Length: 270
Image (cartoon, rainbow, N blue to C red):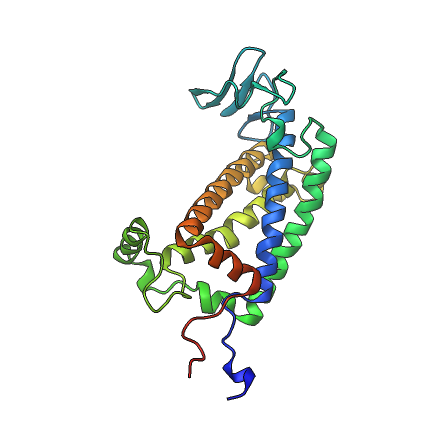
């Protein structure tokens, strides 16, 4: 066999790897700069309008003595962490989120927006390119297609139990995503990420003036803002679960595979 014939196909295609790492950088910057923007008005509403005198379904309260997060009528004391915290010089600050969690690390709405919008465009074009490329290399059909059998509650429950036992792959099929992975990736890539893009556009005054239908779809600019932040926290949850499973499955091997491509085990063996 020739050297080319002996080569095993890569587990992760180049476009997938590039999109993965660009996405990781973009999401980190977008979340941290988004928290800077949120610090300007740490309250969330439903509908078209919202101001200090209106009821907020979620808010971060801050003063020189306490900090708290309120969701509905439930209030959680976050003094020392959110709403009321100390900077590197030991001074009490009353922004919603502390400087270590924001870009820039000091409060600047203008700079936070510049960072956010710049990386939002990179993120949006990257997602569009990934989706178009996936149509040509059949990444979705080959790796993410969810079969009828995988939608069965019994099949999903079996994968849940396997995850609880730290069994993430079927023996002999380590390159195949299980049903939970497929469902989560499809929901994030084709529902949650586009939702983040379109709710972000719906908050723009320019988009509201030119495409008012987009704002109407989400029930108003404030509703779009609420959905945007809910989506952000869902992405954070997805990231934490992703990192936890990465650590449990072997972080060095899995991370290197996403950098170098990895090899599909069992393919091309003589």
